[in-house]
Image (cartoon, rainbow over all chains, first blue to last red; front, side, top):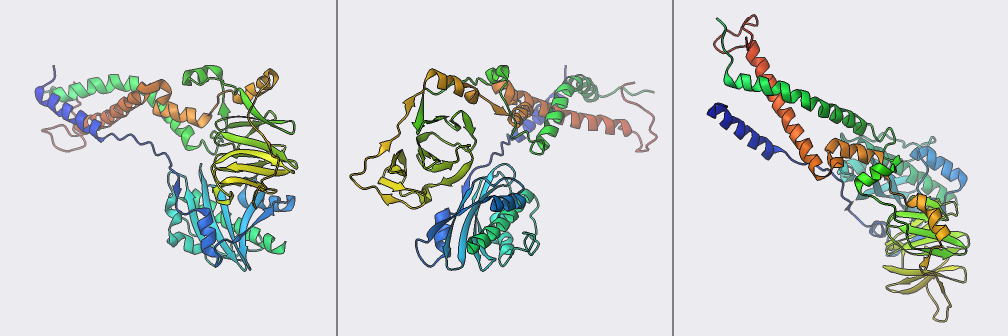
Length: 180
Length: 261
């Protein structure tokens, strides 16, 4: 038989433990920050910019594989343009889920970047201007890497890497679209 | 003179030992599954699927082959939820219930209510045309007119060659609409392996870790184990500290009186 004092203390401890337990199912929810069409429209002076298509030829596909580290999800890439300005909506997996981001490219440099849809359970700090502003003005070096270093965010490394890969791909696609 | 251990010390020592042995088995399971979960992506376990019959039975998943499919130009699309098969080959990017399938100029179009997917004959995704680039949604059916794709949508009928630029369909156009059609027994047999239930290995490991693989009582068992571990941490620390510094003695590390003797 337990001493009543000990029994009381144990009951209290048990209650505290049960009350303190939280069931943590950190499942990611899709967060849409901006629709792709709205992002494209916001980049141009015309309300309905013309949609174009860039087909991934074997050469383009091979370079896309080198940039992404895997096969691109699709063989046809849509984009919008007005003059020398192009808008690219790209998707890339961060850790497990696809991140959708928009890139405005003008004269070979990134003018604007925005996270449009984020589906991972953590790491959505990449949507803040403090991080995204680092891409402004970035260009593509000869080795298809950015001409600058992008500082990471603790706990969002894979999302940051995905954004860097997408920015390189947007610049590469813009170069190829201009050369068409 | 030896001091008798307090009732609390005796209680903690007694249960710390007995419960600890029982919990060790589960602790091992938690540690192993935790390790696998931490490195599951690197090991490719999120992409590796398992369809072992007894395990699928345990999860309550059964093979259900669709009764109907879509036929266009002699090619067949069979779909059920996110599981799509084109001519017996699985399409990985399938998502949602298709409302139509059409083959025009060698391009394979699959429509869901909200988007249009374009595939090569080998099943590779060419493009995904979402609601932003469609004239209207939801889509109801798709068909073929003069080698062009035709949409029957909430906002009317539209045709396109590339799925990007759309024109209203002329009223006199005679469209070959592609409706769901009954599958033959041979087609159903061919489709069977593709519609066997399967789960990613990582999902099963995660369910083992959380206890969900054991049904609704599994998470409760895992919660109990978590509480036991907290109990072990507290009782073990308390017993250790008490052994080092018994009450009523100096705090010298040489204190010679062990508990329970």
